[in-house]
Amino acid sequence: MLTIGELASSAGVTVRAVRHYHAKGLLAEPERDRSGYRRYGGAAVLELIKIRALAEAGVPLARVRELLHAGEEEFAAAVADIDRRLRAEIRERRRHRRRIARLASGDDLALPPQVTDYLGHLRALGVDERIVRLERDGWIPLAARSPERVLEWMARKREQMADARLTDVFLTLGRALDWTADDPRLAGLADDLAAYLTRTADERGEDYIDDVGLEPSLVRLMDSMVFDTLPPARRLVELLRQRGWTGWTRLERDDRLRLGADPPAGRA
Image 1 (cartoon, rainbow, N blue to C red):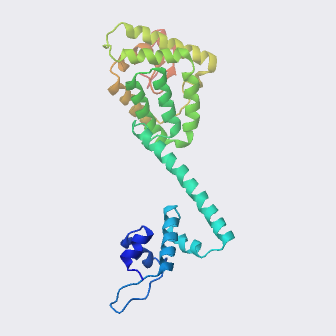
Image 2 (image 1 turned 135 degrees about the vertical axis):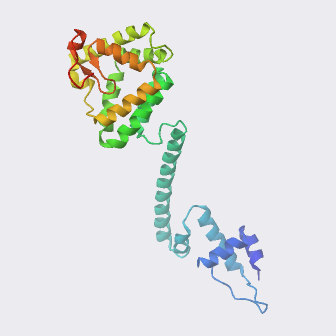
């Protein structure tokens, strides 16, 4: 007859594990000797080894008792079911690991994967990291306010960024972050951006430039984020206005501005 310590050692588990299995009803409580100590026979060793093997295989303790007393067919079916559950858990944990890895970049905390993929695309194009971060920060309120439109917006963004002319503007804007507001190169950047906007509006329609339909308060918020982060942006907006385009987050064309006329009320 074995003491609880000898039983645990024989099965390769701890005494605490044996007591835990007793508490869960997996291992029958043995009779005690005259001194009140538990005494175990060889059958208990075999039973404990089976319990340990099932537990180490990932079988939930709640199902161990069922498997210990199952017939061959029932055992095989139960094991197959447990295997399916484990494989599903593994897939879920892998998804969690991928998400944790993406969180390390700071992009994925409050953004859907479509947006973080887009940000990765900008980085692959060589867009300045400061602009990528600004794009990220702008997408956070957009995705929170209208999550149902993210796929639509992302499809449009992807299509726009496939145009080499817009990519060049993004790359030049990255270099412009280190320019002063009176740098004459800003005028050239404004010419390029206005030319892209005008050509695209003529080819695709003005709705292609701005069909987001944001609330004015959100437009003001996103504009302020741009102006606070990109010092040349205010001057660039002024230059764009001279070329017939108003706004930043919400771009609108008004050819009268290029002709020197006063802007319509509320469009200053």
